[in-house]
Image (cartoon, rainbow, N blue to C red; front, side):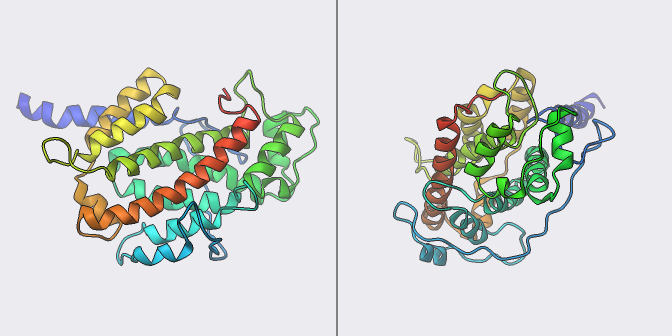
Length: 301
């Protein structure tokens, strides 16, 4: 009986810990408000139009999508993610916010496909996407004013402020929404958290493209995911969340699951698909990094 208790109760306890910690992973906040800390306030965004690809990305062009097959029977589609990423590239160094968030919504499907202990991260990411969606779609932004200003008399931000990442950052800076010393809810701070998570996923894909080690073996995805997390997100997370993440990465599925998600049957087939996707993610990340860095917003509390 005791061995059975250890087998079933320990994983259950760790899962409960993960769910508890997830309430604090990434900043909480939503313009529609919550009656209780334990009741997430999420709405479902339904896109009204299909994205239009914009062109080349550092040698990767729109026709590279032809190497990405549509996978019947699964929610995540790598071709759709690539299309959203390329469509997010605005003029100059800008990133269009709507398509940026659509890219994240597709990435959430990818995360959810990796099992329940990994997908608990996606719940908190979804909260950030929902917040930015509602900031963008609200016509009056009265709820944003009350959340950020708390009766301080600030004028609501115009809807066009949330057209792109550059317009979002500049509008919130002008409105005094962003606080560089204290934790205050803002679209800019929410964007920064998504930006850090995008680096984590990009690093994971890069590591999945690596060849065999000195023993001729491919490293397991859990090890690669843990390594990417330690590089991109762990420096910004408290100790308890880092320990919970270690447990989640230990439950990562085998490499074959990743191959199925990008609709290929071998590592050799997966590499060109993932490298094309990495190039698109990297360009979006590079532009966002530059926008945040130019405004001194990479370390918002």
